[in-house]
Length: 257
Image 1 (cartoon, rainbow, N blue to C red):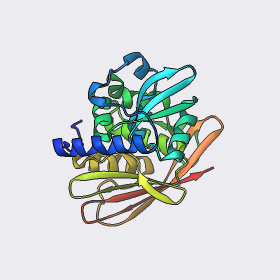
Image 2: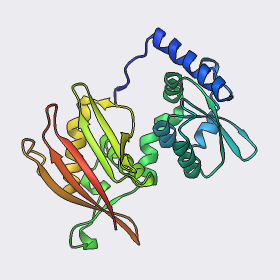
Image 3: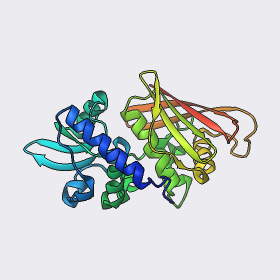
């Protein structure tokens, strides 16, 4: 999958570096120069790669039971509380430049495991309306070759459930695909923009899950997905598609049952 990120210029990196220094000084936090950052692969392997990429942080060191991490924005306290809960450990934050953190994540071998981890930790099961277990569709049955797009969709849904999102919005601009979550009524980016060439495969994957017409792109469609997360837990999604200027938009409303 090609890198969807746009290269950051030297001037932008310098400005980010200085802004991060000021932020650290203002809140009396340690500033970490990511240019000199030593990657501890054992520590990286102990942290879910999906969380590092989605929450834009890198693990720095351990101090007893506390994990010290580097983040671009130490003021986002709800996100940091949520991250501590997901990691199951107390965290202490230090500050680094955002583009430098993203560069470290790309260099770390942990980031290469993100899609594999997504499907290993989240094996969803698609249920038919009649809930006949003999007719359940697993991800493996939908395709004999588990593609990165399927893994991306599964990971996106899994993280939305983890973060208690009410909606997942997938839309495209003139050059990229944007995935957003609605959490506590606020629409926010779920991840960095994805290359536009993956828009059609992502939309088609969700249409297959919702049993919609993948060939119809000019009129709105509505469907439903039911996911079985465990023996006693299932979640319904209402799926709506809508044609837009740069391509179809799709919204998944999460209906926790």
